[in-house]
Length: 251
Image (cartoon, helix red, strand yellow):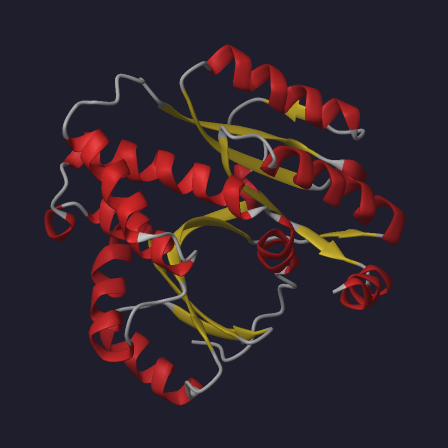
């Protein structure tokens, strides 16, 4: 296991800063409803729902809002038929981009995602056109403040994690996607609830982008994340130091 990651995970930080609270809630509510509809409202027996609830808590969603979303899904009150979709393509500077969505209208969402790529000089490709440049992994995050890295490392090792990384005030625990819920549960028992957990696309090959292309890429990602159907956006961008410094100055 490595103590520090070389990957500049700017997207997670930037997304957390820029997304409006209402937009975040809309996406989490949809995931809660879909998870409960698919596997029932017992979080102990429904790993997907358990993860959605953990993320809802991390976003400070009120409990009654969570409960309504779960009951709507489990009770059959929600008659929407959401489908999980993955879109892949290349953004400005040839950066690989993966978009995950939950949609009740595949044609609408595909059209909107394609339009976003086109607007910012990218192009949407076929399925698996860029995903070979990523690992599909479980990722569990804890705020590093007040939580010693060695303690997290030891707990993660015992829980069966593959890697532990620390950057930007966050401990990131990586594990096989099929082991996410087991590892997350074991860590929660020792360290408390994580800041977030879920399955992500982690790049194995980074693509350098200069300041101009990087700013355009961020606009593309912002537009994608502003779409209610889009749940997550992942990229293999390695942003220039100039852009990183500029973004820090805008914080």
